[in-house]
Each structure stands twice: as C-alpha cells, then as structure tokens.
Image (cartoon, rainbow, N blue to C red):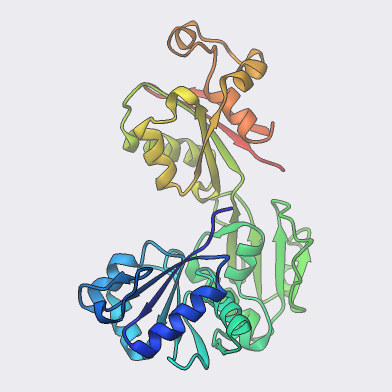
Length: 351
C-alpha cells in the first residue's frame, strides 16, 4: 500500500513551528511542508506565487492538505480549483496554536474527517467535524461505499438517500453483488434485504450492482458499483488510447455493465509500456496488471489459440489468459472479442 501523501502549508513563523511538530508526529505519512522563503529551512519547499495559484499547483498531488492559517484564506485559495467530492483531496485547517483541526473539505471520500481525528489524537488537539452523519453517529452512503470498495453511480442519488438516513428513515440495503459486509456496522435504520418484495416498507434503497439498467422503483435509490470487473486487453502496437477506451465502453454497454466497476486492465509484459493501454487504465482509474509469460503459458491451452499472436508475442493468446489470471481465475462474462486490432475479454473477480 502506498504511503499517504500530505502537504502542510503555512504562511507564518508560528505556523512553521506547528508544521514541524506535526510532520514529526506524522512520520508514518509522506509529509512535505510549504511556506514563504523567509520561514523556510532545508526540509521545506518555498511558496513562490500567490496562495491561490500555489494551491492550484499542489491540489492534485496530495491526498491530504493541512493548512495552518485562517479558514477564510484557505476557502478563497482552494475554491477555484475544486472539481468534485469524488476527486478533491481532504483539506484540513489548523490554528497556529494547534488547538483545533478542522475537516474543511472532502470529509468522507477525501479522508479529511479521519485525518482530522488522527491529527487531534497525535497533537492533543480538538477535531472539528461537521458532516451530518458523523455528528449524528450514523453512516453516509459515500462512507458505506468506501467501506465495501464500491463506487457511487450517481452522487445526487447518494445525497438523497443519505438525507433519508440522517432523518432516521428506514433504508433497505440490497446486496446483489455479495459485497463483504462482515466488517461494516450498519446504522439501525439500514436493513439488509434479499429481494424487493416488501420495498414499500422502506423510504429508500441502496443497491450494490454492476448492472446499468434503470430500476423502476417507487422510492429513492442509489447504486453502489463494486470494482470487480477485470478486462484482458491485447492490441496492435501504438493503438490510440481513445480507441481502446471506446472499445471498452461499447463492450460494457452491450453487456449492461457499469464502467465504474472496472478494477483492472490485464495484459502481457510485451505491452507493459503500451501508451494506449496506460491511457485507458488511467481513464477508468483502474490498475494495469502485467501477467508474466509463464503464467499465460500455464493457462493458454484453455482458450482459442492464434498463430498470428504467437508469431508476434511468443504466446498463443493474450486477452483471455491475462483476464483469467488477473481476476483470480474468475468468471468469464465475455470471451475474447476482436475489435479492429484490439482484443478484449471481460472477467468477474469474485474473490
């Protein structure tokens, strides 16, 4: 697991004292302190622009940004650079005395609430957390999604159902994809169901599903999409990334499968540096998995062989063996498809 990256930003001498203290207490994180030149030392980086421009330059580089300064300065400096709660980093604000640590932005998905609690515990500060579900001791839809490794299909739907949870209305959790709920302590008003026959008992429903088909439900609902789809990918050298992305999207659309459920793209070592595959993996926020030739050779007899592929790669198949291995020898949802120089197969990781 990668070490969480933190930026600690301050504009004053008192702030630098606290920044150095905080960094020492976060030695299990990768911390970088930023400040003005007159307060800098050998371990800090210098802010050379105005604070708004500076914040724009680092906002995509860190998971957590802790600002030791007035809240108003932080709000104005980050505002032009915010995109969406699903991608914005967690933003913390601290006073220079280190008395309070405020979870300002992306409390749930960005991790700011947990980060504020961590700082408070290690520095003896008071965490200030204002998200409604945390204040009431219940659970928002986005927190549930994180805990069971799902992506939210529609954030407006998630907001509507979270409002019902906050109101203590009864909510059904329909776990179609059998996501692991063992470690999740659900609020009392969220009840797991195995079918929708008594749906009218509930004010809202949360469903785990890879299916893109719209459900005609009489109550507000939100889909949580588990990241379980593994795609075996092969392509001709220098196939444009946009073509691979389009091929994947069209393939999944035909299967009524949600592209937000893509966990990884799997291919062979010969394609490890293939720009189009790298671009596609980044587009879908998926891992790129390289399957060693020896592993492919162990399982390739299960699949259709190609003499042409053997001449170019030394292997008789690419897409299907790679998808099969990368999915943990999972279920095949779609056998190899040839799509104009691109081969795709779709697998379900059931582990």
